[in-house]
Length: 156
Image 1 (cartoon, rainbow, N blue to C red):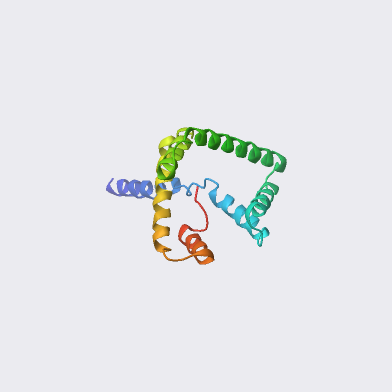
Image 2: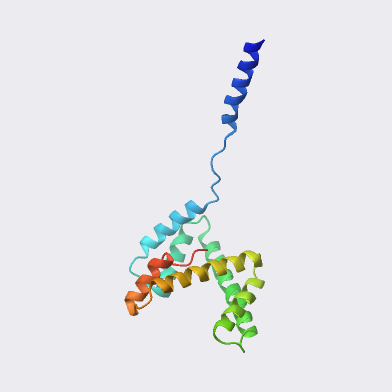
């Protein structure tokens, strides 16, 4: 009887490993790889030209490239409308007061305002830290320093 209880407990303990699941992949790795591939294809381009190239390359990798372009265009229009609305609401303000107003207005229009505010505050803290680290630099040297400190671009 004792042997069967021990054997049962051992089998039960061993079987729990069968239920272990692989880490959840929410598609971020695949998107990151797609972006890296697109960015490599667009090396040497800057500004709007680079953004357009990366967008085109990213959409070319999708099952429905035309639908991808349409979604991006729609999203860009929505963002511009939200920004125009926030800008109109904050017209009378200047400097830090305007920046705070814009953040609050834009976050109020987002799906999750609390998450938006937290992300904005995190980004501002990272920006302030980068500015402090790059103090005294100018021109291309300053841009390169800020890019290094901020990780190349905003993280979403």
